[in-house]
Structure formats: structure tokens, C-alpha cells
Length: 99
Image 1: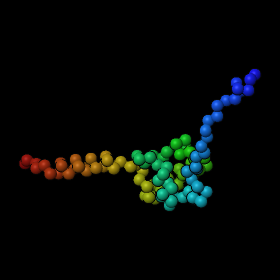
Image 2: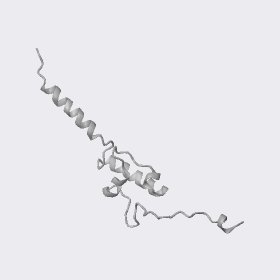
Image 3: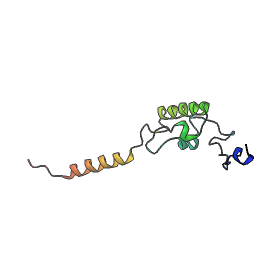
Image 4: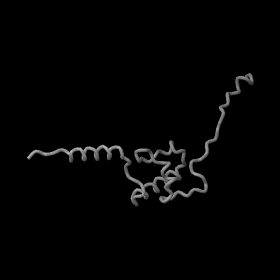
């Protein structure tokens, strides 16, 4: 075998920084950390998307659930739906009912 056939193309590997630094504590009070792992709808992002270890993902999930129970985070983030229902309620209240 030739050496040229044995050599494979090497991909340029760029090591990604971990999303949670060693100094950051995963806690329900650390809202700046927790909010990075929640989608716009308020769902907990998956481990693959977050690039977390299994232990970190479990701790993040527990912290998010504790923050939701203590009303630090909403269970659902549906502000657009709330605004639409609020507008409908306002317009129906302005209509004059015939007696």
C-alpha cells in the first residue's frame, strides 16, 4: 500500500467552549444561566442542542422546574397569544349591546 492511500484527509477540529463554566453554579436562582437553556416558547432545550453532559442537563432541568414552581419562570411563554386574547376581550367590551 502506498502512503498516500493510507493518509486520510484531516478535518480541521475547532474545540467548542463548554456552555457552563466551572465557576457557574447550577441553581434555580441563577436566572442568567437558566434562561440560556430555555426556548422562546418556554420549553427546556435538549442535551444535544445545549452541548451539556448528562449530569449538567439533569441539574439544569431540576433548576428550571424549581424556578417554575417558585414563579421565577413561566411554565409557558405565550405572550403573543395573551396579547391577542386581550385585544379580543377589549373589542368585545366596546360593542354596544341592544336591549
